[in-house]
Length: 203
Length: 128
Image 1: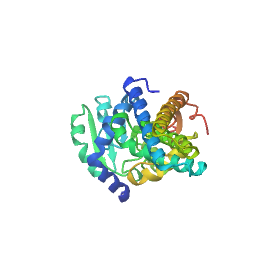
Image 2: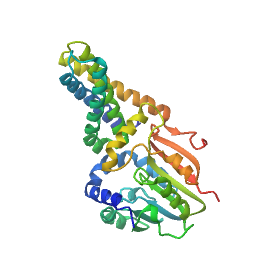
Image 3: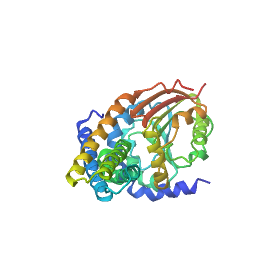
Image 4: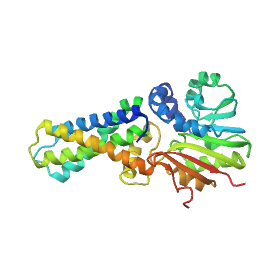
């Protein structure tokens, strides 16, 4: 049974998600996301699909399985899914309850996902389970900051934003390590708040 | 700072405008009867909240965290500076607006400097 509270939250946001995210965030993040997605190779798990805003940044001809907890988001993504020049199989699925076989993916990509997963370490452990040994995790995420004055600001923001959507103060790099991955690179895109994270499942 | 001119100008203007708005709000709320420390904390909170509200229209053009963090920071600084000044002395509106604008410029400049120090590949991967 998926997390119904989280599912309902993102279902509610789905109709106006593109207005909020596409013009500003997606355009600003495009070069960094494209740079990360250029690493796509082999059998790939992508989350969270959302309305498919990231699909135009994917390299063509890839074999991708994409999941999202919100059926409304996946519904909104249909046009972009159809336009992709490659194979994308989309599923409504909670990261805490992945139904894929263990060690079934070569790579996992996440895009602004672990700001919203209710139990991030458990979610990352689920990704660890479905990755092959030596498989790679690539993340584009926003996190909390380790530095003053941003750290208390992000904590304050989270009190407000958690009800509407994502948390702003996640410790995602530490969570990735806690889930059993070896982090190989952390690249800050904006302050230490927006970043790409590369990690590997020890083989 | 972001190297793309659109975002440099957009970030600068958004923070300048927010600084002026928070300057006006602080001028309207705080008077010489206020305790300076109380005025500082109250207006820092009000400024951050104003920054959060201003973020929603700004986000459509300027992005998510790259808009939210500077605007909340500028709101906080502008509220603090103008709020304290308005508590210390009778402050003409035009002075409050100018101080707000200066706070906006200082706010985004601080973010640009911090970003230039923090961005790029870090040593976080090696840390336990």
